[in-house]
Amino acid sequence: MKKFGLIVLVGALTLAGCVKDIPFVTTSVPENGKFIDQVEFAKTHIYTADEIHAAKSEVMRQSIGTAPITDLQDYAQEVLDRIVAVAPVGSPKAEIMLIGNSGPGARAAREGVLFLYHSAFDYLRSEDELAFLIAHEYSHVLLQHTPENLFSVLRPYLLTAADVALGNSGSQSDLLRKAGQMYGSDLILRDLLLPNWDRSQEREADYLGLDLMVRAGYQPKGASGYFEVAQEAEENFDARYQVTRNQLELFLQAQFQPKGQDNVLLNQFLSEFGEAVSTVQQQLSAKHDDASERAEEIFAYGMREYMPERTSRMIHKEPFDSFIEQNKTALDNYRIASEIIQTLQQDDREIDFRALEAEARKAVGGDTENHPYTRWAFAKVRERQGNLKKALQNIDLIDGEDDVLALPVEMKRAEIMKSLGDVKSAYQRVEQVATYYEWPLEAYRFLYPIVKASGNKTRENELLIGCVARYPQQRALCAGQESTMQMSSM
Image (cartoon, rainbow, N blue to C red):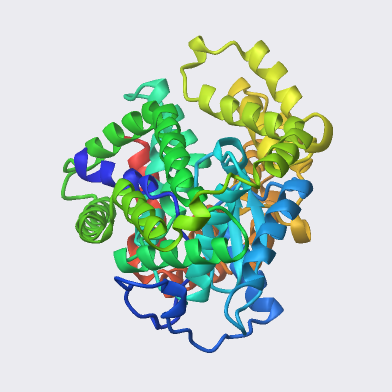
């Protein structure tokens, strides 16, 4: 399905952030002279602790958790601090958070939080390249750019579609069912979390990012080097998940076929999904620059403005290599977890579960014993083995902030609890999680069938009204959830 395939191609532009609802205030990129000397900056807004917390929670709603590798996070923070220190007077401070995800990329929140994927320390080769990635993301914050997160429109539909593939074990292959199950961690984070920047905004963040990193003492070659290694990392990531994509897209394509006039909710869902995909297709083609074009532009800009600096060596490679070596065990455990998640794309008959379990035990050894990413991988192995109790134990061992884990992990825990017969505890937990995350659609989809089956009409109406009020475009999904159940039975 070509038009749906465009959804997942957004990762080709791996430098992406999430800064929203702030007016665009910069000038265009100059043909001569340094961009930082000509750009206009708006007055800095000071965000409250609650606003910063909300920005972090938004990412936790769409990821599988942080990557609490303290040394690497502190190291990246030092790089960011150097960049902030040379920014124009009055520029906002910012903080780094490592996110558990093997897909290349990073994300900036307007509140001054930069979310860096742990995989950056696998494919970057020097502190100079890391500095460009961080400086680019910080530039989005500094310039107060406003992206269009087109994929937020599609996310509710994809969640339902993944449920369909997971629940459909009859007419479809087991591998297809696994594809639906897999589309919920690294892949969906990379494809759906990254916003769609305007071309001019991406260029400005590239140019200002280069200016800032050079001011901070980094080699301008790091910018060109970043594009080189990031593109290769992106291609490798895409190749690893191609089977998953192919299987899920074939299934979704089948779902676009007519299902009969009597299934009004399902037909409405399919119609809305198709329209949303078409909208993304049109806007992507209109807005996105090719990564190679951006690499050529930043190279030319660096040659024009920073020729003397380009003659120096990569002065920050040795410290970078040293920090990578010091954290080699943790990064290796994360790599193992990533490989486990990839392996679970295969059919059960092709998986050596004894060997996979042994690898999962390695991933949760040492400092990464209770990390979200490594425990999530082990939980997925246990789930595929049919051992739901041990899958639940792995999730329960995850360390989380405020006693609440990332939303997908919390929802998986509730689903397992429900499958094990502990419906009451699962319901109560989702109520708590829903309040923490300001009632995401996933919570309504879990709670509504339970309440409806209980016969509590008052609570049923409260959930229905609350769902429609928060997600008016998802009225069909809110109205009883029959659409999901009907689709699963086909």
